[in-house]
Structure formats: C-alpha cells, structure tokens
Length: 467
Ligand SMILES: Cc1cc2nc3c(=O)[nH]c(=O)nc-3n(C[C@H](O)[C@H](O)[C@H](O)COP(=O)(O)OP(=O)(O)OC[C@H]3O[C@@H](n4cnc5c(N)ncnc54)[C@H](O)[C@@H]3O)c2cc1C
Picture 1 (tube, helix red, strand yellow):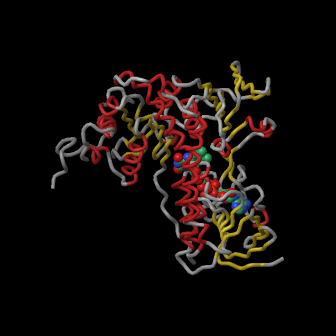
Picture 2 (cartoon, rainbow, N blue to C red):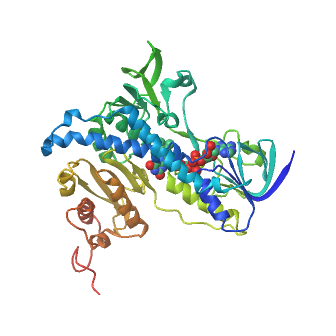
C-alpha cells in the first residue's frame, strides 16, 4: 500500500478541523485534511445556522400573538406555509455551506482527502486504501445524534437534526424527545410554526439549567406554550402507521418524533487502540484541556469529539490550540475562555461562568431580577423570565449567571466578558447603562447582588472611581 508522509494530518473538516488548519497553513508544514461524510461543517449544514433560520421564522410568525394588543389587525390570517419555509431554510443553509466550502476545502488540491480515516499506528493512518504517515495528528471528527437502536426500526418517522432540515413537509404532530439545547430550540420553533409538539425529557429540568429558580421559571414560561413532560423516559411503539410515544402514565400519538437525546463523539471506527490511545469510562481519550494533547502522544483532539464544550466557538478555539501545538516544537498551554452557552429558544436560556452545582453556597452571593417590570422588556412585550447572577461574597467578583431572558444572547455576552475581565459587582455598577435597554435588567440584578457582597465602592455605589 502507498504511504504518503506529511507533517500534520487533520481528521475532520468541520469547524475544529478548519481552525486547526488555519494554524498549520501559517507555517510551511506539509499537511492533509481528511473528511469522511458530508463536507461544509455541522454548524453550517445541520447545526447552528439552519436551526437559527428556523427559529427566526418561528419567532416572526409567533409575533402575531401581540398584534391585537397593538391594534394591528389580521392576526388570524398569519401562518407559515411550511414547504416554502423549509425551502427558505435550505436555501440559506446552502448559502452558508457554500461560503464555508469556498473558503476552505475548495481551495485545497490533493491535500484534501475524502474518506473515513482510522489509525494503524500512533503516527499512521489509513484512508480509502491509502496510508498517511504524519508526525502530528489532530482528531476533529465531531459528534452525531444518538438514536437508540430499537428506535431506528421506525425509519423516517424518527428524525434528528441531521434530517430535520431536509423535510419538505413538516408533520402535523411531533414528539420531541430530549429537551436539552437542541430539543428545546427546535421543539418550540416547530410548535410556533404550526406543528403540534409535545416535549419529553427523562430528567426534571430543561435546557441544561441548574439554578432551581431559573429552571422553575423556564418551565412555567415554556411549558405554557407547548406540553412538556418531565421525569420519565420516553418509549415508542408503532400504531396505525404513526408512533405512540409514552412517558410514564402519559402518551401521545404522533406522526414523527424528533430524537434529541444527545450527541455521541465520532470515535467509533477510528481504532484508537491501534494508536495506543487510552480512553476513560465514556470511551473518550484522556486529554489536556489547555493543550488539547492526548497523553504525551503526538496526537491532539479538538471540537465536539472530545465530548466537552460542544459549541461552535469552543470547537474553533480547540482547533486553533491543537493546530498551534501540532506545528510548534514546544507544547504550549492556553487559557480557556469563560464558559458560555446560549439556547435560542424564546426567551433565551443562557448559562455563563461557574455553574450553579459548582458554587459554594457559603462563599457565594446571589442577585436576581425578574423581567416582569423591566422597561425594555415591557416595550418589546417580552417581559417574561428571570436573571440570576452569582459573585464571590467577600470580593464581589462576578462568578456566573443563569437566565431565561429576552435578548439573553446579549446579556450573556456582557456577563461572560465581565467575568473574564475579573470585574466585581462594584466595578460593573460604575459602568454606564443607557435607558431604556435590556442591560438595565443586568444593572438591577447587580444592585440586588451588591447588597449581598462585602466589597463596597468608595464614594458611593454608582459614582465614578476617584481619579
Ligand atoms: C442542531 C444544532 C444546533 C446547534 N446550534 C449551535 C449554536 O447555535 N451555537 C453553537 O455554538 N453551537 C451550536 N451547535 C454545536 C456546533 O454546531 C458544534 O459544536 C460544532 O459544529 C462542532 O464542530 P466540530 O468541528 O467539532 O465537528 P463537525 O463540524 O461535525 O466536523 C467533524 C467532521 O469530521 C468528519 N468525520 C467523522 N469521522 C471521521 C473519520 N473517521 N474520518 C474523517 N472524517 C470524519 C465528519 O463527517 C465531519 O465532517 C449546534 C449543533 C446542532 C446539531
């Protein structure tokens, strides 16, 4: 078998792989980029982008619910023509994919290899009958939706986000099984677009929230829109050409079920053992989160495949770290960013910084604001939700937040940046807050928090610091 030698082999041309490649291409190192399956990245093809297009359609049509309040007539006639809506989703999706491809693999010659790679040794890969010997290897193979084997027998009645955006018609009735980020985003959006949706999760919470107060509010607000059943695992049986989905005592007959119970790292088929890679009990290689190196092997792992921060900007960062370390003699450790997740359901669900379960109640102060009376939220007719922020009681340094919030995507960034800058509640209260903006909710939560922290501003809460 032919053997080709390169300095770096990147397995997977998703976001992590492409960011890794951007580092490699800054040098004169030889490389190959190997991709099995569809190109164009999960983000652009079946992830972040098409899902957000769908959410935008859903949000716009849902807006009709406030028309009568404003004196706008014709609310009853506003609806989504589903085939056209889905075509629009795909058109925009194709645009995003084309943009990714034209900026990446389209520019490569024989450095780009299509096929599934597997390890033959720690520095040797096999792909499509070719052997690649690489001084450094980056695993960036992403993740795939989990569908329990018995459910696979229901064929096209079970959809995942890999197939959702390809649907030309949407079902009349749908069960969404798994209400983490993806299930909640898509479940609410589909319901708003006219699909009768029932959401089911085996745990007692939604959207990955941990703070009990925010979790309760999220359930009240989102549960008022479509049925949400928690605390019982779903079971599916076939009935009259449809699916009977049951959870404990409750059951519903639906045309299709969206399976969103999680994503499994794409490690099967790579034959990690042949490379001498040891895995933990989840089957994931033990790696260094600051260098992305696996043990002391010349192998790095980046993006969803490592099973940790399965979001786009982290896949990008991890790809860059892995790529940097693959082309430098000395392995460098990089500081990771403040954790930030945004669920684009409406209101947004966001988590920032230290998670509720990791906080020490003895040393943590909490501040909060409900969105009922927030001026900007009232103006937008979106005054539902709760923001809770956490700080170190003694120093007042901001630690984290959870929220169900209108424009939460913006608030969450502000809070993440504040935490990364190591700002205190007092520092933040000295910042300007315009009126009337959604950031005033953050300001109100800060006031509430300020009362519970020991570190106070000299010369008043809001006055500028003395020169
Ligand atoms: C519906 C949905 C919505 C999302 N929304 C958001 C969002 O709003 N914001 C956000 O930050 N994140 C979001 N995400 C998550 C985000 O899309 C992922 O974190 C990110 O795309 C992961 O990139 P990656 O490079 O790790 O994987 P991928 O982009 O999946 O790339 C991996 C590539 O490796 C290939 N491959 C697999 N095995 C092999 C092999 N053996 N050999 C060669 N190639 C192989 C795969 O086919 C694939 O092309 C969403 C995900 C989904 C599914």
